[in-house]
Length: 243
Image 1 (cartoon, one colour):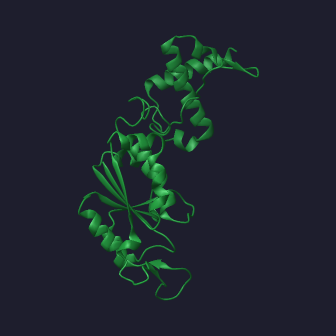
Image 2 (cartoon, rainbow, N blue to C red):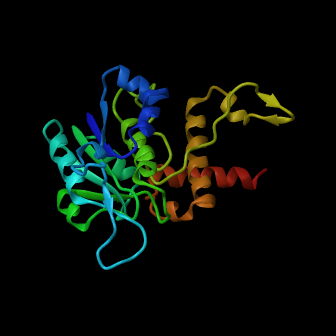
Image 3 (cartoon, rainbow, N blue to C red):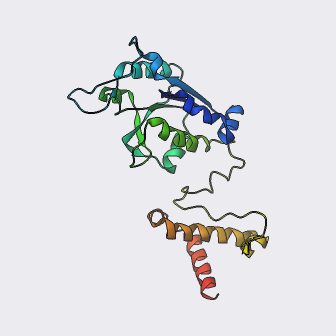
């Protein structure tokens, strides 16, 4: 996969050289390229913004440098152009999974009061991180790109790592424990020390269902309970009653 990021602040994306994502780059699982939109400005002062027609506060990013940056990038990356903006569809795990299957993606990071409306004809998709305001598209692009790349085969340690995580089934992840077995009178659940793989699997599934039900009922409503889920819920509900 090739990812291109069109931005006014390319240095912000140096963090993709670190940690898991950085190792994925080193393995050649994907490439990440940044393009400074300002480099395409034909203004002698390299301006990329101007006052909005009709008045109003703030500045709007102009058409010319953005469009030229997109056209130049399209020569090497035929992927969809994704604009990080407040009017877009809210990003979620399902979208991350869909985008992770693409060969190339181009992210356009807006700034100031947004982009000239005419740029939308160059955009394939607008994506929002949520109903809140950020200082620029870069702040949204970073977690979105991270969530996409970590789904690429070979990035995480095991094939199951990206499958058994939060939101993959509209469920939150089960609790995790590591050594020591007891710390300040807090003990690891005995079932995790039992070595009984099926019991452990059922407990983890139960905790995913229970945690989601309690903390994110909106997600729980979207989850379709399987026959196994119902059996597990009934089993552990009975166990808790008998405590």
